Length: 323
Image (cartoon, rainbow, N blue to C red; front, top):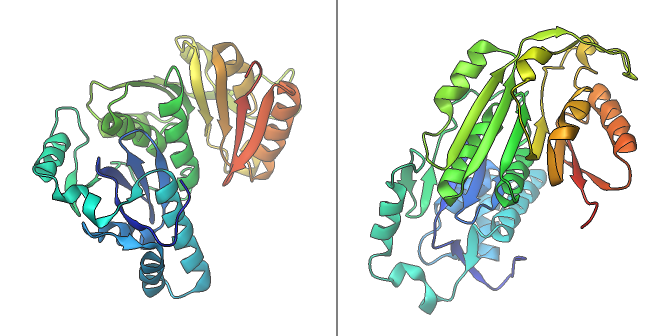
């Protein structure tokens, strides 16, 4: 739904889940839609009362928080995202659900349901859940994670495979729990300490099934590779990973050093036999030299049955054959 200047907007009656993500936040609706929002838009959303606010009023609130033009435009783009994903909806004063008897108690009950994200209620219908892992500049961009959450929750099988799991993994789990849908996440991780921290951060929920394959990095076997690679996961540790997967995120192995820049190339050969019909492959950090070259090679190899697009710094490859 596109924003309408004369409409009054408030938080959707089912409430939203807000997950802080660095200086930004991820906002999830009950039907599994997700948007990435900046700090100014988050503050404005959290202060919306039952009376709501018009688009000009929202713009004035954003402008009061970020006087710089670029910050104002980013804040308004976040507001647009909240409206388009259904986190903020238009209401007439006579139709405000805040006047319905017992609605607040009903929402409070939902927040305390077994398996729901551990969260606190803020602004009436916003639940805040921490991801439980430290954020760093190496984390996937907020827009990428928001798109990933929506993609996984909308996919037929709702099975996600992640090379280099972390904050995105927890975000998908919390979002699925909030939306009340079942997801299965399989992570391939090189670092035992990070794997342990991730297990602790994942939600304890009947809606979320998660498993980790701890796979140390070994010298890469690059007999067919078009690039010089240094490391790849120990193939013996990957033997128990079973498809089909509807979404694959390639954010590992770590590749921030120059000599590691092509080390994610083998992921495509590994996942191709494990993909469900209509699957999506996401290659993070495709703005860098190494992943950019890998992405171009993958696009050429996959051929016309796949659609390529960029979301922030990640390359998205969607299987379109037969659609």
